[in-house]
Structures are given as C-alpha cells and as structure tokens.
Image (cartoon, rainbow over all chains, first blue to last red; front, side, top):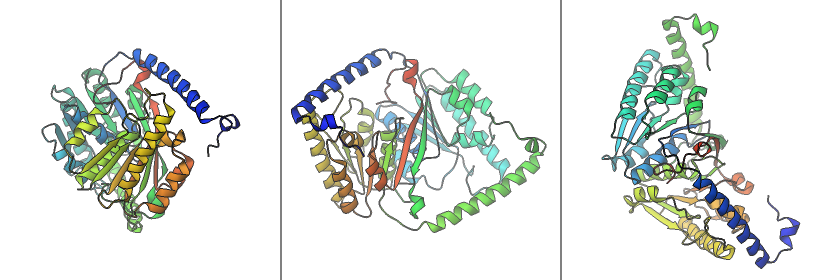
Length: 213
Length: 213
C-alpha cells in the first residue's frame, strides 16, 4: 500500500516531472561515483543459499550469461536430481562451451547408502578441483555442494583451504545449496540468501515442467 | 562451525551409516507423501524480489529451463540496462523459442524524463498483456516490472486486476525487481526474496563480464 504523501498529492504533473528529473540526476551522479571507485577485476566466489527457490536456477542463469559472453563453463552436480531435464537440454545446444559432470548414482533422496554417497561426493569434488585449476573454463558451478558439506561428506575445511589457496585469480566459482557453511560464507565474495516468501506447494500445486524441472 | 555432537563422535562408521540410512528412509517417505498430495497443475505467478542479486538471473534460468522443455517464452524488459549482453547473446541461439521486447529508450538511470518513462512503461505493459493473453507463449517474464510499479508508472491495481482476471490458467508469469508491491505478492503463487548477504562492491570489485552483464 503506497498512498501518495499529502505533499506529492498537491503537486502538478509538471512539478512531479521536475522533482523526478532532479532525483534521478542525483541518483545517477551517486551511482557513477560509486562505479568509478570499483576497479578491481577478479574471479568471484559466489554462494547462493537459503531455503527459497532460485539457488540453482540463478546459477544456471549465470551459466547462460557467461556462455553469451563466450566463456567456457564447467558444471558439477553434487546431487543428482530427477528433475534436471530442462537445463540439460538447453545446455546441450552449447556443448562446445559447457562441461557437465553429474555424480553418477550419487546423493539423492532415493539412496540410503552413506558410504556410496561419500565416495560419489569425493569423486565429484576431485572433478571440481580439476575444473577450477584448468586454464580452459572461466566459470565453475558446484551445484548443491553445500549439502555435501553440511553432511560432512567432504570436510568444509578441505574445500575452503583449496578455494583460498588454489582458485586461480580470475576464475569464477559458484556454489549452491541451502545451509551454506559459515566458513564458506566467510571466504565468499558474493553471497545471496534466497528466502521463501510463498511456495505453491502450500496450495497443493505439484512440481511442473518448465518451473521445477 | 558444526562440531559433531558427543553422541555422534562416539559412533562407529557403521553406526553412522545405519543411522543415516534410517534418517534418509524417513525423509524420503515424508517427501513422497507430500508430493503425492500435490496434484494441481497450473500456470504460476512467480515473483523474485529483494535487494540481493539473482532476481533477473534466476528468471533467465527459468527461461532456459523452459526452453529446454520445448516451451516458448516471451520476455519484456521494463528497464533497459546497459548490461544485458550476455543473456541476449545466449538467447539469440533460441530465437525460434524466445521473443524479447525491451523498452526502447525507456527507464534507465540515464534518463530523467518522467513522462517518457511513463510512456515507455505503458508500451511495455501493453506488449506484456498481449504475450500473456496469446496461445503461443507458455511463459512470460516481466523483468523489472516491480520498479515500474513502485514509481506508479503503471498503477499496481491495473496490473493485479489484469493478472487475476485474464492470465490464462496454464501460463507462467515471472515478475522481477526489488520492492515488489504488497498487492502483487498477495496474488502470487511463488515469491522468493533474494537477500544480499555479501556483495563484492564492498571490497572495490567492479562489475564484470559474465557476472554482472
């Protein structure tokens, strides 16, 4: 609800226009000044966490943006979902620019075999390290790594040490998954928490093609 | 910091494995039960808001997922950004499935002409309505519509009434932008708030190709 303030309500359209122009001029000046001070260029460690939707989806959005900028991207999926067909099929059209590794029979809600999950997580992490170290990919997405760290399948200290000490300066690394560990947030350059405000499951709506998978 | 609890620390690997298997079994059973109750299939009104990054990026992720599922998507950009090259170039490879409309010289930080902005917003909204009503597109993204509503360039009541009364049952509509209006959140099926936990601007890092544009 944003009722106009009494002052605004008494202004003519022309006065509103003039007021707006002045406000925007100031905003632009402030913004230009801020941007001028931002001169560092570096590969970012980005974390998408929180209970809301959009963590992996935003990572895939970054992938497509990077692809559009002629970058090459490596993707490691630490949790093999049943619902990943949409992105995969879209990414197939960019197979010259994208390398996808999914943990074979790895961690899903379907498995109850902890040792197999640990082995699969380890294999995926080894692959992730290679993608981060190589000269070929400019961006690496570690989809749902957070869940692996949460379950201690890979010690968080090992991951944080590797990223701190070995991530090439210009490489972008994107980590997704709820419950991001504090140590990772600490190291990250950009952290977004996706909060669920409203979810259609609450009103009985099922997962649908094009939205959930 | 998640030190293992004293109880867990005394368990053998085998005991941990058994405990894990049992926990996962319960989780899967609970999840299957929930999914079984979700039977409604409908087009969703999705809102990405909040001050954090990822609102438009997650919308673009949804676009690519939809494309991968052979859907056709209409995109209306209510704010013409200087930094949109990446997505655009990636989307060009799907020009048979995607229709993009950008507000010509519309609202940006660069303009201070309120009347021109209002006219451009109006034109974009008319385009948006046509995309929502047609039988051709299964998903419509209204990128940064929230900013237009916030400035009252289009009355929020008009938009909410249209979506409530005229959005076809199966069409997905995705609205992005910070400061989503209450009325829109009220109507939406799925609302995610992207919260900024950490931003690289704070440490002097500039906007970079592949991340910001």
